[in-house]
Amino acid sequence: MASNELQRLWKLHQIDAGLAEVRARAAALSPGRELMAEVKRLEEQDETIGGAYRKLRAELTDLELAKKSAEDKIKATNDDLYSGRLVIAREAQDKQRELEMLTRQIEKAEHKIGQLRAQIVPAEKEANTITDQLTAKKKELAIGKKKALETRGELEARFAQLNELRPNAAKIVPPALLARYEVVRKSHGTGMALITKKQTCEGCGMSLPEKTIITAKDDKLVTCQSCHRILYFTAGLV
Image (cartoon, rainbow, N blue to C red; front, top):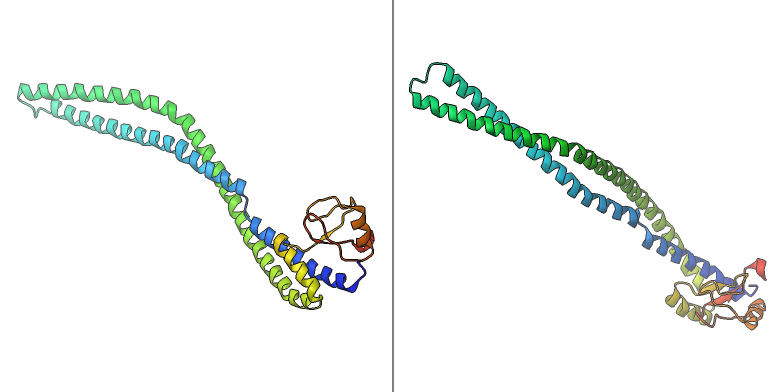
């Protein structure tokens, strides 16, 4: 690429290639779509599995409170029965029936409490596992977001630097050549492409005819027949 015109255009292309790379990196900048999807999946599991555990725990707490309430009533009823305050036989009978009812309630509650405690142990373990995984993934996501913000700042600074260099680089390219270059650049993001060692266009991957290779080596303007980018060799490949 010995001609001055192509050398100048190549320098402009290097700036545009840098801008295209910055745009691509910025567009793809993310703490990780897969990681965000994993956090969402774990949140859904936490809501389902953790919710089921919390429901069991709430039901157990209610039953234990109901049992305690029934036990307190039994104690109060026994106090009434054996305190001598009840002198009417019917009242004593009512208290006795109440004791029997409360005893049945306690027995039923104890049976259910035993069942719930057996269910709660594995449910708690599973819920805690999901919670721990979710906490770890959220921490990883937060680190990723912080890193993404830092990278975005670096990309913005690089983009501004390249944009500042571009006008002067474009100014020294002949107008006709620049116009041709700009048409292709607006279509593909870059207006030039390297001829690779395999004699293909680096821009689109198309194999290049031998005539095109020879023309490029003669420092003449030549384009890829497929993508229309202006082709060039690096100094080491000429």
